[in-house]
Image (cartoon, rainbow, N blue to C red; front, side, top):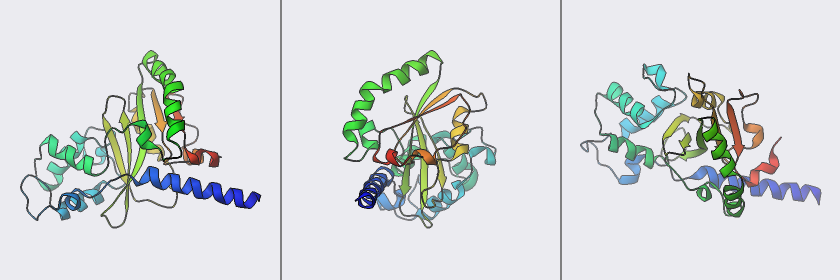
Length: 230
């Protein structure tokens, strides 16, 4: 009976995580059926090359003045790498196609977790925002999207501020990858700002970085997978 219950919990957790991570990220050229050489945009080959260029590296590796990728730093990399000047709105369209952007809290939960997330938003989230205001801190919502249409597969790890600013990195996924420590530390920036991080069910608690500086305050969003925390 105990083994069956554990197996059932693992199945629920796995389903929940697939729902949370799955998102709707897709290579933009695939999504819009872009034709080769379409003006004002990257070709599919260029977009795939861009994604590969972004894997595991940050803007400062290219001399860009950002800790993590944003719409502006991505625009700069495209100019640097391809010699193309894309409008800010066009770059934003790529990010939206990749599944990046503000989401409602309930959209970060599977069907089994929605009620718990909505209760959490009413009962816990106000205290987080008050603490952030008192310490002039930023609040970020962290999540992960599996980007479809690439080979090998790519995960987009993102942080969306309460004001809607998107910061991200692209990784090549492994089995149950941990929340990247470097990504979390870079959210605090060189100024070592205090940040509150609301982490969705993309990562179990035992996949979070350990021994983070006190200026980085993580908060778990309710998820079926939290029962698996170490």
